[in-house]
Every structure is written in structure tokens, then in C-alpha cells.
Length: 185
Image (cartoon, one colour):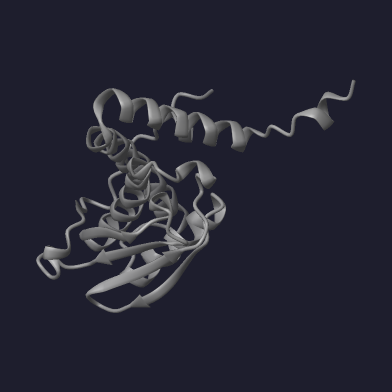
């Protein structure tokens, strides 16, 4: 029997499935809002670490909004997202995403959208000092795409909602979480 032909399970498919099942379990146990909070905390830690990786790779310093957006587009390309800039100015960046890195398992699990909000908000705020991320359209809510609106200044458009992120010292290096290499020998 050729088991390779029977089951086309990949590491990525397994991890996506595991993450969506964990999210569904968390939503069931603590509710969607609390689950989103937990996922958001993890997203911020991963966002800090990924932001630091790009900062080191780009030889330090703060990036402007356009450069931070280029980092996000590159990051999502690497994790099988399909980000593209819809519009950008000094006030806000609007990004579209036609392909969720979590695959179709995202549908019905809006809590996983806090991973996007957390990554985008943390990486942007790490370099610009502030970001408020609003997700008016999501694949998780059966949309054809995600629309990610990143406000770069506090107070403007705050009635639209969203999550706020504040940047710290871009030179200080956050420890890598285990998923990105901390503690590995």
C-alpha cells in the first residue's frame, strides 16, 4: 500500500488544522471575545519577534509607514497570504488580503483575525510609534477578502473602532518566542 498516495497531509495543513481546532475549543470554553484576547496576546509577542527579525535584517532603526507596509506584504507572502496595498497616506494604510494564511478553516472563527490585527498593529507600531487596526471585511466572516485599515495617528477615525498598538524602543530586542527559535539548540 502506497501511504503517500492515500493521505496528502503536510506540516502546514496539520498546523493550520491544529490552530483552528484550538481556536474553536477556546471559543467554546471561554467565548469568542476572550479567545480573541488570548490569540491577540500571542500575536503581539510573535509580531514583536518578527518585527525584530526584519529590523535586524534591515540593519536597525525605525521604518516609516511605507517601509513597514513593505515588511508586512513580504511577511504575508512568506506565510501564504496575499497582501496588497489598496491605498496609503500619512494618516492611514489600507491593505487588502485575498488569501488567508489559515486557509478555509478561518471561516466562522473571527477570533483568529486578532492574529492579523496583532501582527499588523505590532509591526507597524514598533516602527511608527502607533497603529490602530480595524478589520471591516474578513474572510472569517465569509468575505471574499480581508480589508485591513491601519490608522497611523491616534484619535482620527476612532469611532470606527479597532485595536490600538503602541510602539516602544525599536532598538531593544525582544526575546524570540519558542516558535521562532528561542530555546533551540
